[in-house]
Length: 339
Image (tube, rainbow, N blue to C red; front, top):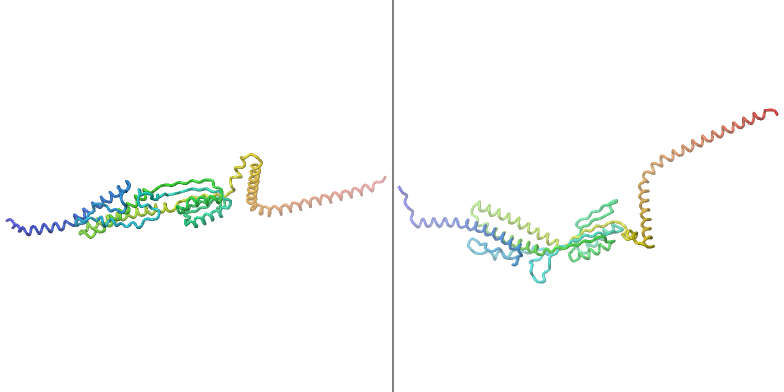
């Protein structure tokens, strides 16, 4: 027996209920696909130069009712940009983002005083010493310092440190990172807008699988955003503070050493003074090395030497007395012989 066919109004109501249940899931899936496409599209656009404003929202992301969320995404928070970062390339008269680094080697007479002077100079210009090491004889032969100074004080700091002694080497380099700064800034703005979109769509998820999918996508987008923000902070720090590696070496200026190759009285005099100083230094080192051994050796050798001298004196006195007695006996015998 065939079941009775439900009336047409009941069938229409049943179809409407199915459409209502499928509509949120369909809108959620569409939002996920369009959001992923917008994020990847914004990354490729920013890598090719990002000609538009970095605050532009990803296009094509729609809400469940068909309205665009571009206005919402367009208000992405870009207030976290650090000093020295450039908003976007292509603007006339725009400041370039440049990372400056340098290495400097200086020969100084007083190493501790030179290290203190370098620290004072860096503090005076608003920089910092990020690392320092010392080594060599007695821990005071060489010193290496890594300085972070404001970009405006870069050249002045190099000249000030070089003035502490005799500059033996200087190397500087500069890298223009304006395009990279703009690219990272654009990626951060787009990632923030897409992340807000996913968070706004989370209440539309009506089933457990949909909720888990949206939350997983939010977690992944959040991790990507934090990585981009960390890169933006690192670039801003490198642009704002230049890096200078300073090597300080204790020793006399090299002029005296170079004077040995110069002819004439002045060159010979300078070479002679330098040689005399080296001889005195070597002798002082030798005396200092032998002195700890000389004291115990003297404590053993001096008493032994005194004992040997006393024994020799006794032996010499005994031999002299024997000879005197023999002479007296001989004289007595010779006196009894008649003529």
